[in-house]
Length: 139
Figure 1: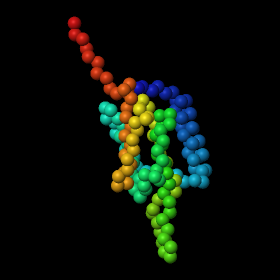
Figure 2 (figure 1 turned 180 degrees about the horizontal axis):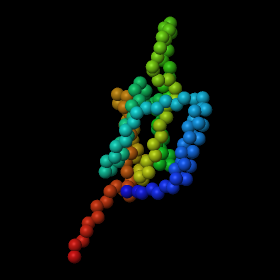
Figure 3 (figure 1 turned 120 degrees about the vertical axis):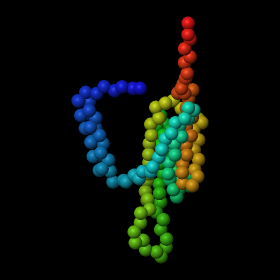
Figure 4 (figure 1 turned 90 degrees about the vertical axis):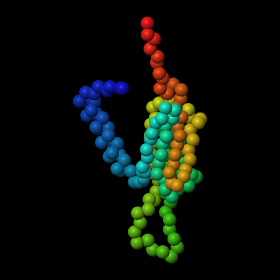
């Protein structure tokens, strides 16, 4: 367990940074969509699942750089000739999610698959990240 000690000044500065980021992001003209994800951990790996219906594997970009896993891509507009769109709730535009994984992983063995709109990424843990059992010697 990790304990963090914070002073009121540290909390105030953290909130100021968060507010600054929110204001900067709201001034951005480009809208970035998001999507639901879940991350589960086993003894040997992390398993990330993301819902990305309507996309093929070629339309999704996955990168792992400096302990940050990033999934991004773009939903394109589906327009049909001769039909007027009265309203649409279909996602259109860029999407992106990033997730920091602090435990050491084996980057070369990360695998991704796509089935029925669910992207599954297996991220194997490095040996030093796996739990170790320490045996007690009784005397």
